[in-house]
Length: 327
Image (cartoon, rainbow, N blue to C red):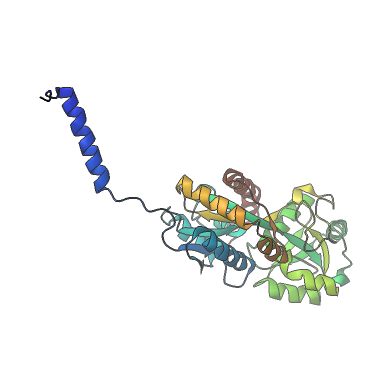
């Protein structure tokens, strides 16, 4: 004959039964990803950021077993796309191809800062970086950074062109102005192409932009490269010295490419994305396609990338504010 349950045993039995029933009633959490992922690009189609995003989308789709689509959201110095991502659900299905423009420049060039570029995102993985190049018209007589500094001091001013207000070239010119103590006067253009035309024609003596598009002009002698803005030489133009070699360690600045998402993303999703990106960067074809864009790939941990982003914001934001750069 079974013994009757004690009161405490009965309570434990009922608690266990209720918990089991609740577990059965709750739907199982779907494994991520179970639907397509979107990568927002803060520039129009066709540029370096767009190309990088599409290479990564193709490779990540194969790694993650879900479609990855690219969504171009240009405008307001990258802040249109940046705002869309920082306000998206933190479920891992909306990401951003992050770089210096929507993170370190654009938010600080607007009248009202739209988001916190450090804490307003989950910075997931570093894809790589591409330096700018400081370059000159051959008739200017400038061949080195020392020539540029001497010419600016002698004349009392030196004009430089960039792809537009708040572009990475513009910000770098302001950095040079502060670091070298010379009067560098910005001449903004509506993109890198018209700036290149005027640089070749001698309308502006100096231009600053991301190195990628200028290799043919260096080879033809139409433009003279003075230095790349990275700590080391760029594999795209190995004959061009770095600013460190030119004696200006404080002028090191890279335009980075990374993958970021909304704040407070699940740790397991962030970890999986970081691992997937780093594995993709080890693929030989991906390395070559990035190198062709002048991008040096740099697999790092998620905390290391987040720290890198904060360091760049600390370097660039004061320049943007101090120079009164506005969008």
